[in-house]
Length: 181
Image (cartoon, rainbow, N blue to C red; front, side, top):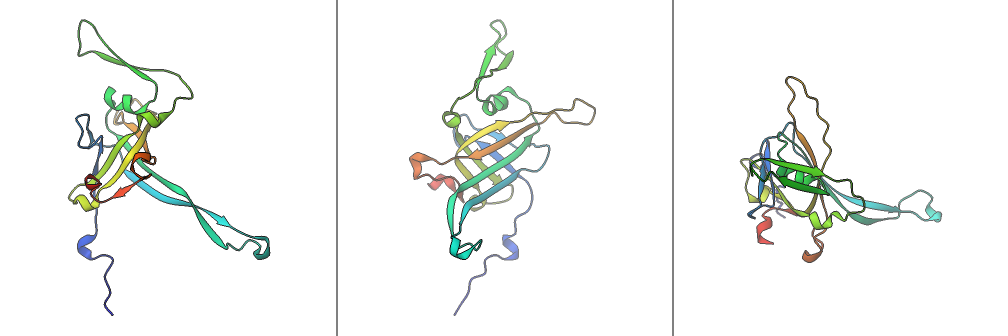
């Protein structure tokens, strides 16, 4: 009986990556400079099933969905990034100088963020398409806390959360080349 190795020393991946928001679209934004690691987490949540006859012994496990996130602290505070990260925004452009812009954050509650969902892809540098991780639909949120002092980068921390792509059989995460799906 032959066996297959799950990995070899050549398969070990290390190093940084880039994050593409709206990959392969005209609105694509590439995140390539960060203040810290880009962290990816993907976990299938489960519910433990118990019955009285077995006490606290788990007799079954039931899937309760996939929770997948990307955390990235972007070394930028450009308006285009902030606009993607907050749900109720309005970009205002100066009528006399179109290069001057301001982003207004509005305090509106109850807004469904599903409409703002967009594709996001992690691409490890030096890797191949097989190493990509894609969220076909993701909600991008920011939680900005800045220290304005010497030696501190004014970064924009983003939390990117995958949601099911209901038009694509509820796919939440794609490992490998997501362009073929």
